[in-house]
Length: 247
Image 1 (cartoon, rainbow, N blue to C red):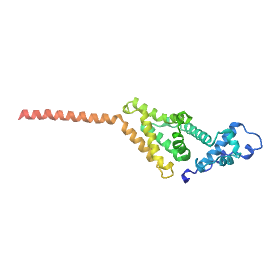
Image 2 (cartoon, one colour; image 1 turned 180 degrees about the horizontal axis):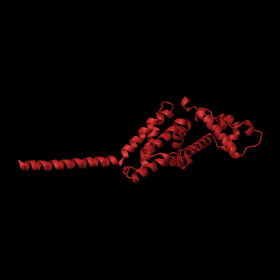
Image 3 (cartoon, helix red, strand yellow; image 1 turned 90 degrees about the vertical axis):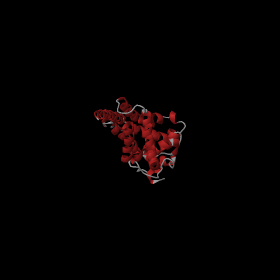
Image 4 (cartoon, one colour; image 1 turned 45 degrees about the horizontal axis):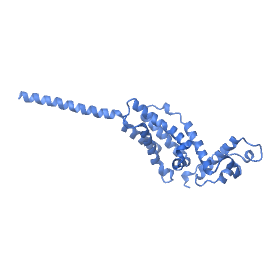
């Protein structure tokens, strides 16, 4: 794997052999949580393609068979790790209400997603390149979670349209797709371990393109300029008529 897909270990999530072995038996939810935490560590270090159930079992301090008591297979375990992680991202960001101005809000939402990709490239790659292409995607929890995650963009753009700040001829859903589609395009090479991106620059660029492109005042200003030119031409014509009449 590329170095970009190797992350520092989260040792605090490890379940010790004493906890998971022959000592006092742990409740099912506690043991499953320990396995998920161990899996998260190993996935960060090795990448989801290379991780083995035996690697996760060793990190969790359990035998391989114990993992299959809680998870159907490696794919099921990976999906539950990703689902837990995505839930953390949904619960983490509460700053949008404190951001003032439509452009700043769009920038914040773009920056938030870019920062997640930068911070957790392995799980972001699993989400974008594996889960999103799964034929079952629309029936999985990830589809609804992703709708919740991207709903903020729709809400910000809808508010701007209703207030008259944005033009109304492009749907907020399309603007959401533009924002997140641009993010995916700009981070694709990074997620493949073949390039990099500047969070601030990309967030600024996306917010500027959407905001300036949708700003209703721009069209009003152009219309006002046109009307002003017509009035000047009209006055000039009248002056010319007067001058002709005097001559």
